[in-house]
Amino acid sequence: MTEFPAAADGTVSTPGRAADRLLLRAVRQAGGWAVLLVLAALGSMLVQVLLPAMVGAAVDSAMSGRTDDGRITTCTAAIAVFVLCEVLSDLAAGRSSAVGTAWLRRAQLAHLLTLGGRAAVRFNPGDLTARLIGGAVDAGASAEVAVWAALSVLPTLTSVVALWLIDPWLALTFLAGMPALVFFLRSYAQDMSALIARYQKVQGAIAAGFVEALGGMRTIAAAGTMDREAERVLRPLPELSGLGHDFWRAQTKIAAKSALLVPLLEVAVLSVAGFGLAVNRVTLGEMLAASRYAALGAGVGMTAMFLGRLARARAGAGRIQEVLAEPVMQYGTGALPPGPGCLELRAVTMRVDGQMLLDGLDLTVPGGTSLAIVGRSGTGKSLLAALAGRLTDPQSGTVLLDGAPLSELSREELRGAIGYAFERPALLGGTVGEAIALDDVTETDRPRLSRAAAAACIDAFVDRLPAGYRTDLRSVPMSGGEAQRIGLARAFMHRGRVLVLDDATSSLDTVTEFRVSTALTTELAGRTRLIIAHRASTAARCDLVAWLDGGGIRRIGPHSELWGLPEYRAIFQPDPPADEYRPERACPKSAEVGA
Image 1 (spheres, rainbow, N blue to C red):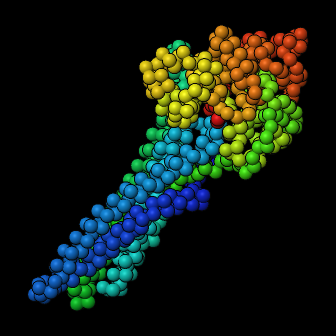
Image 2 (cartoon, helix red, strand yellow):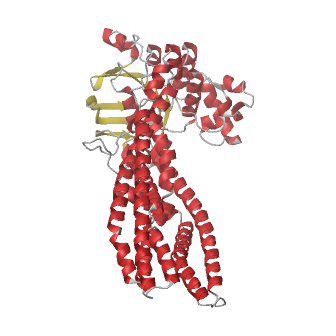
Image 3 (cartoon, rainbow, N blue to C red):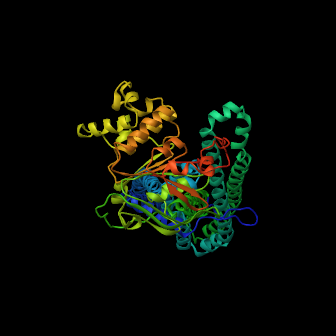
C-alpha cells in the first residue's frame, strides 16, 4: 500500500499538488454555496476590521458632545450585519462541506468499483474505509477551511493599514513584532502537517487490523486467541496516542507563544498611542481603536485553528488521491462480431510478486465447449479465469473472443458477453431476487429467474423463505453453499456467450454439485464454459480438461484420457489445509473481482 514516503527521522511527508488540486475540485462542487460562503465570510471579516474605527469615532464624537450624529446607530447596524454574515457563513460552510464530502466519497467509491479486484489487492479494506469516511470528511471541509484560512490574514493586513492611518509610529511598532508571529505560525503549520498525515496513516492501520479480525472471528474464537488478536489490532494504539499528545502539544505551544507575544504587542502599541495622546497626535477614540487593531492583527488563534484544519484537509485529500491515482482499466469502443463464443489466449504472460505464473500461455476454447482448468495450488488457475473475462489484463499477450481482442471492446459489450460465478460471491441487492438478477425483478424476468435458480439448485431454498424472491436479503441466514448457489444462479441468468466459474462449486455437497454440473452440460450447452475445477468429478463432466502446470498448458484433452497419468491423478489428492485466517494477508485467497 502506498503511503506518504517516510523520511530518515520517521516523519511522513505531506501531500503535494495532486492533493491540492483534488481539494480545489471539491470546492468547485459546492458551487453557489461556496460563493455565498466567500461573500458572507468576507462581509463578516470586513465588519470586524471596520468596527474598531467606528467605535473609536463614536467615542470621539461623544467626548466632543455630539451624540446625535448617527455614529452609534452605525455601530449598531454594523453589529447586526456581522451577526447576519456569521449566520450565513455557518449555513454555507455546512452545506459546502456536505457537498464536498459527498462528492469525494462518490468519486472514491466509483473509482474503487472500477478498479475491481485490484482494489482489494492494492489497498486494505479497513484502511479504505478510513479513507472513505474520515478522510472524505476532513477533505470535504476544504471550502470552509480554504476561505477562512485565506481571510485570516485580512485582519493583520487591515490592522497595519488602520494603525498607519491613525499614526505611522503605531504601525511601525506593530510591524516590529510581526516576524516572530510569522515564524511561530510557519513552524506550527509544518509540525501539524507531518503529525496529521502520520496520525491518519496509523488510524488506517488500526482500521485495517480491525476489519481483518472481524473476517476471522470464527477462527479466533475457536482458537481462543482473542487476547492475542486484540493486542495485534491495537498494537499501533500507543503510537496513535503519542501522535495525539504531540498534536495537543503543538497547539499548546502556539497558544503559549501567542499568549506571550500578543499582550506585548498590545502594550507596545498602547504605549506609543499613549505618548501620541499626550502630544495631541492621537485622540482618545483613536487610542481605543489602536488597542483593538493591535489585538485583532496579532491574534493568531483563528489562523492557527484553520491552519490545523487545512493540514487535516490536505492529509485527507492526499490519502484519497492515492486511491484515485491508481490506474483503472481502459475500455475500447468496439463491438463483438457474431460468433459462438470462441475464447483464445495468445502468448499470455503474467508475473505476480516476482513469480512467473503464466509464461507465454496459448489456449483456445472452441465456442460452446465446456473446459475444465485444473492444476496444483498456485499455478494460476484463478488468474487465468480473471484474464478470460478481462478482470485483469495480461502483461503481454492477447485475449480474444470470437476474434475480437477484449481490450478493444466497450465495457457494456464485454460485460454483456462474459458472466462469472465465484467461490465466495458478493450478494448485492435488497432482496434475494435482486441478488440473482442484479436488478429489480420484473414479471417478464420471473421465468428466466426461476430457470436459473432451478439450474443452481437454489429454488427449493428460496421457496421456503417468507416472501420467496422478495425476501429481504439481509434477513436470510445462509450457509456457504447456499450463498454459492445464489451466485451460480446469477451467473446462469447472464445472457452472455461465455460463462466463467472460478471454483464456484467448492462449497456444494456431492449431490448438489452433480446436479449443477449436469445443468452446466445440458441447459447451458450453447455457451462456452470455463470452469476452474478442484474435483475430479467436475472435470470428468466437462468436454475437455486443460492441465495447467509450469506457467503453461501441460496437456489438454478429455478427462478420461488424462486420468491414466499418475501426475494428473495426483492433482485431485487433498492438499494440506490452508489457514482460514491469516492476519498478514490483505485479501482473501479467492475474492470476487467483478462481474
